[in-house]
Image (cartoon, rainbow, N blue to C red; front, side, top):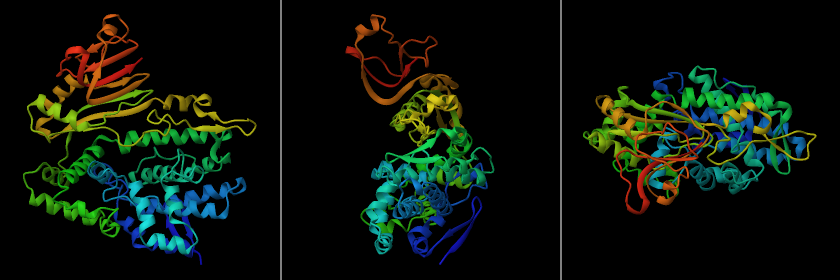
Length: 474
C-alpha cells in the first residue's frame, strides 16, 4: 500500500508498508520531539522544525538520488538500503540536537552517529530490518560512512542530509541563503568505480550548493545570538550532568532508557536540576536562557584562510581569560565551530571530485571553479562570551591574549592549540629562519612561519613554551 506525507519543501512524499513499519516505531517517532536547530528560535522564531521532518526529507532526497543512478549499477536492494539509511540517519540525536552532543562527547566520548548505529542494531529497528531482509549492521555502516558507495548518499560530501538541512533550515528560519538548484544537482550525479561524482555539466548547481552552505553557516548556524543560546544549553547540560543522572541514560548499556530523552523530558530534568543547584553556573545558564537573558559576545575574530584554526580544549583558554580578568571560572565561554563550514575545508583535506564524461579520470573541483577555489578558504568565527556585567573586562583581556578582534585573512591558518608545549630551537629563531615569537596578538609583518604566544605566558628555558599558540604560514 502507498501512503503520503505532505512536506513543505517537496510536496507529497510517498512511502510504502516497509517504510511505515520503520516510521511508526517509537525510535523514529521520538524525532518529532527533538528540534532540528535546538535554540535557534531565539533569533529565528520560525526555526522550530524537528528531526522527524528532516529525516523524512533525507529519505525522500536519497531515494531520488538513487533513482537517478539506477542505470549506473545500483541494485533495488542498494536503493532500499539508501532509503532506510536516510530515514534512520539521525536516530541517535539526543535532546537539543548538537547542544547535547557537546556534553555527550566530553562525558562519554560519544557522538550521535555512533549512537545511531547502536540503536539501529540494538532496538526494534533491527527486528524490522531483519524481517525485511536487510542486515542492521549494513544499514549502520551506511549511516556511519563505512560503505564506500552507499554512504555517499547520506554521509558524503554532497549528500541527501546536507541538501535537505540547507533547504529546510532556510525555509523555517525565513531566509533564502540555503536555496539552490538541488534537483539539477542530484540529476548530475553518476557512479564510476564505486564512487559518486558530479558531472562537469552541472558545475553551476554544485557552486550554488557550496555558496548556500557557506552562507547558512554564517547567517544562521553561527549567528552570534544563536550560538549564545546554544552555548548556554551546552554548558548547562554539562554542568548539571550529575544532577541530571545522565549516566543512567547510557545508549550502549541501556538504549531503551536513552530513547526516553527528548527535548521535553530533558527540559523538565534540566529545570529540576537547575532549581536544585540554584548557585551553580548551570542554573544561571538555564534560567538565563528561559528568560532570554543571554550571554553577551565580548570578543570575536573571524579567520578566513586555507586552513582552519582549531581550539582543541577551549576550556583551557577560558581558564586563562578568567584568571587574567580576575573572574571566577565558569564566567567565560570560548566558542569555536563544531561543524565544518564547507565540505572541502582543510580539516580533512577532502576535495570534491567532478568528472567530465569524456575524461579518463576525475578532476578536483577547485581546478575548474574559481568560486569553489575561493570557498576553500576556511571561515571560522572565534568568539568569547560572558555574562553582561563582565563584557568590558573580558573584551580587554581577550584582545590582549588573542589580538584585536577583526576579520583576518590568511592563506594558511594552521592551528590554535591550548595548553601545549611547543619546543623551538632557539638557533632557528636567532638565525632569522622566519620564526617570530610575539606577545601582542597578530604580527603586522608577514613571515614564512609565525608563532603567536599568549601575552600572559613566558618563554621557558631551553626553548620550551607552554602556550596557546597560533601558527600562520603566509
